[in-house]
Image 1 (spheres, rainbow, N blue to C red):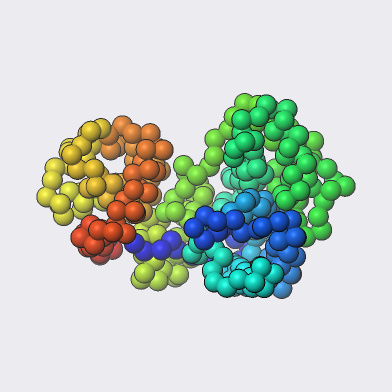
Image 2 (cartoon, rainbow, N blue to C red):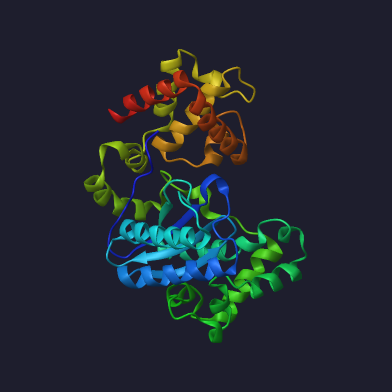
Length: 327
């Protein structure tokens, strides 16, 4: 399938993440983490990129960055190569450190930046064993976690000079105490992640924000990236579904049953409706069998695994994509 579209323009905000190859750790010890941050700081300075939030996890990282010079690709390429090279030299190894390309989502700052910063900063307590701990223990762990920008958000004396705090804190009247409460509220009461509102795999923004991006996307729309571009100029979900049912010569009602004998075909419909119709996984689940979004996510993952070993299925998906690209 086509890769996600890269969107670049001056002062764009992004959530960026990258995982270790085969989900392996990308740091072996704290010295590696310090090395990672050193290469990150250097890359930020070289490319004039602003870092608004970060967290280092065991086998991946999360950034929220802003690119005044519309140069995310150049920045990430330099940074990932710099750290991989330093890591390999330190550990006398060769080869890839990361699993494919980094993933970047362009973010509407007015609607999602504050919530996204909380999502990034809560990562350390969303994994075992910390998510099993009490609220008090989770808060204490977060406050002491050294590999995140959270400390500077809740205590001015712990600010790091290479992190930009003002944009996020501006949503809370520049108050660090309010940001601390914002974090505490999420742990005590729960919170929703913003990813169900993602459009075309790469945009997190309201309808007005999408409209503003259309002109930029039209100019940037390379042929191999048209599925993501098409998701911004979204096809009606029934059009995407119909393309699947016509190709496989089955009735649309068959894919809308909770228990369908056409599981692979329904997964194809889920994937292509997600890509070309710009609807969330929750909405896909409602349309196709009354499934919840986690079941849709599992089915899409299963499809990717099936396509890796089933050339006929992969070819079918590519042919349907080709037809959708012509619309």
